[in-house]
Image 1: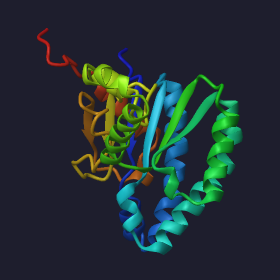
Image 2: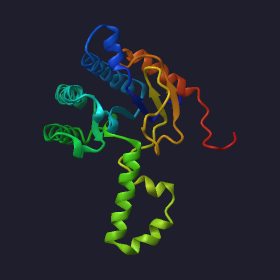
Image 3: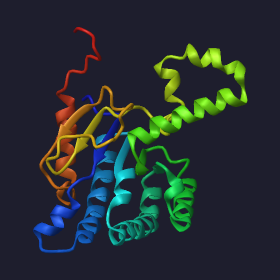
Amino acid sequence: MNIPVHMSLIMDGNGRWAKDKGKERVHGHFEGVESVRACVEAAIETGVKYLSLYAFSEENWNRPQAEVDALMGLMIKAMAAEMPSLGRNGVRFMVIGNRERLAPELNEMIDSCMSSTAHNETLTLIVMLSYSGKWDILQAAKKMALEVHECPERLEEILEMDVNGFDRYLATAGIPDPDLIVRTSGECRLSNYFLWQGAYSELLFVDTLWPDFRKDEFRSAVEYYTKRDRRYGKVK
C-alpha cells in the first residue's frame, strides 16, 4: 500500500467545537490534545514516518491574549504529560517555527523534549509552533544573505543553486516535503502553511472539527492518499 511518508495536519475547528457545546474556546483546545494523541498512535500503526501538526501560526499571535496564554500553558502541560509515552513508542519530537516569540519556560520544555527523544526512529512528530510559510521563506532568504555577507565567494554558487539547494535554508531542512496535507473543519485553504514544501502535496479538506478527528478519520485520510496518482508534472 502506498502510505504517505510525511502526513501533515492543519488542526482547525477547536473553537467552533467548543462553541457548539456551549463551552469556552479553550475547552476545544484541551479536547484537541486527545486528537493529537490518537493521530500519533494511528500514524505509528499505519506506518507514516513523519507527522507534522500546524498547532499555532504566526497570525495566531493576534488572538485574544487570554486564549494565547491558555494555549501556551496547554502546550507545556501536554509536552510534559506525553513525553514518557512518546519515548516508549519511539517517537522523535520536534518543534519548528519562530521560537524567539515563545516564552522562556516553553522553550526550555521544548529543548528538553527534543533532546530526550532525539534518537527515536519509529515516527518523527513535528509541531509547527509560531510558524508560517512566508516567515519560513523569509528566514531562509535572510540566511542566504548573511552567508554571502560573511563569505562573498559563496555568491556565485548560490546564484547557480536549484530548488533542492534552497531547501536546506528552510526551517524544515532534512525533513521530506509532506505527501499529504489534511485540513479539518471544512475550511479550504492553506492559511500560510508550507507554501514552499507543499508545492506538490496532495490536499484533503474535511468537514470534521479537529477535536472529533481521531483514528478512523486519520485512516480514512491515509486511504484517500493511497488512491491518488501523483505525477509531479509528468505523463504516465
